[in-house]
Length: 118
Image 1: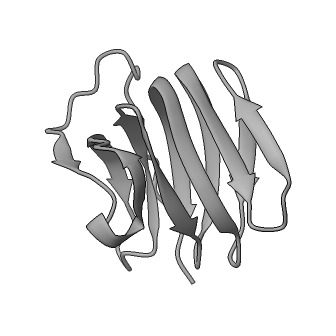
Image 2: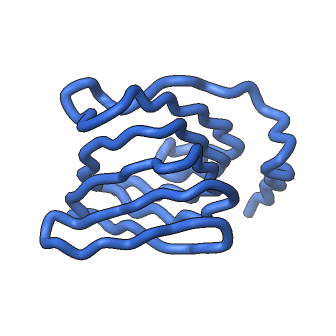
């Protein structure tokens, strides 16, 4: 059994990676992602860290399971079936395999995440 200490999200100690959604998924803006991946399991199927995005919207399709806790900013998440959620600091939620919708960052959003791949 192992133990992984994650850092204070305000001061991540790992080098950030930058990127964004695939260009064919962008619906508005030019969102830029910054990710501090603080944990990866030996089998490469579990991850944890901090993610930040600048404003914009893009289509999301999940084949993984993800737990999120919003640390700062405001985002709107909508499901293809019409359900809609506004999330901000302190909100926690999960996205499960099969979730299909849109993530719209209204104000630069930072979240803590845990991802489990199939």
